[in-house]
Image (cartoon, rainbow over all chains, first blue to last red; front, side, top):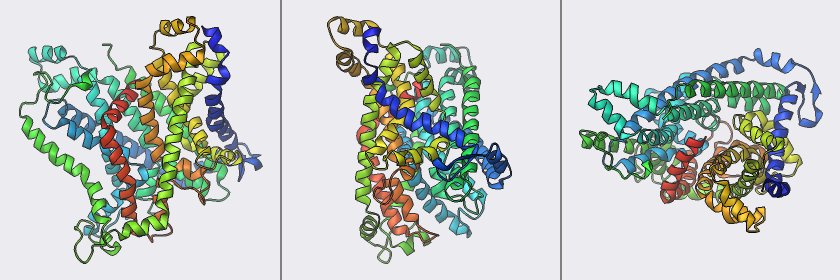
Length: 280
Length: 289
């Protein structure tokens, strides 16, 4: 069978592979190469070695964006997962109206980041106006604004995944623990959480990468204001490419560093939580 | 299936003691959850001066603006042609992605050699690469290859979206017993007939999941179309919304609110219609991802 399928390579694989090469492999390799070059378009590249990398280390906006993004990621991963898990726990207890609540909480996920940013800009600025402030008053306002926005958007998605995980725990397991007189806290930490570890793995992975790579919401909510203090990494890279002439190479070097961090987080997180999963 | 369990059907060990208290708490929370969207809808009917001053008030005789914000916004942004572009790009890309990547995934799973293993590994790898890494070379390449239009961008989405789809389809193909396909081939089916007659119909659940995940991404995507499309001729809904912000500080919040309503409305309608599929698709996608 394998032999007769093999002849059909051009039909089955070639379209996807050609697009994948043009849309991913080629730009990725060019991206790595260009990070060692000076250029304004891709055709006039000139090799300059590590110049771009030394340039970005001394770029204060980049270093600030890196810390801002790291802090944002930590806070949002914790808040989103804790709240989503708590809501999922309560929505698996057979409460009347569960389906409706689930539908409502999930809804913001379908709205795009740009639209979300403006929705929350009008709401949060409306509240802050009572105190004579705006979202762009200082980076702290932008930071917490983004945290609130991300929680609103992502809790529903993670909740759905946690609900599926909790529902998969066999009833007998909970019943046995209750019969043995396990208090609610022990039941949670020694039965429920270990049993939903696969869901925790996937949810922390998704929230980590979503938060770290956040762009649209950042652009629409604060656009990095005041003076780039609420700018996250993805937006910083974008501005380096398209708003600072002569910085294209530095922008590409930042993108490579960004990729390495995302890859490192993804691999490390996967190792860490997978090792805690129990075999069912 | 655990997910199919109706509400209130959970076993006694799980049921909350005072369920009605939670129902009240969650009703309030749900109303709060919907509030931001309602706020936008309310303000879409107010004159712009009243929006930033008192966003929380309902429109009254002085601030009510009827549908003028909508009319102004649609004229200013040419919203409907942007909506048409968004639909063409999303539907076209999802259709092409489903067709091409499912075929590719079947081949990659059934044929074992170094090349298929390498392609599969590259697909996995592409899933952790952020868009910023490739955005500059990709947008220049797309321009050189004349892909800066709603049809050309479909190929870009196929290329950049292939990783996740191939991975998910491969996961499913591995669970299909080989005997079914072998029987079809022995009966004289060509690989193409076997794929479309036997394999593709079985794949339906994964096809729905991939379709939903990709549609959610492509419909809402801002940066890729912003960089790839020829913006003088083609815009999408997110691009139009961002354009309304325009220059420095001079945002007409009236038209902005109206356009936000027009951007959200189709999504809400679509969601209410296919809610069950979307939620199940997300769960299935998460388990395999």
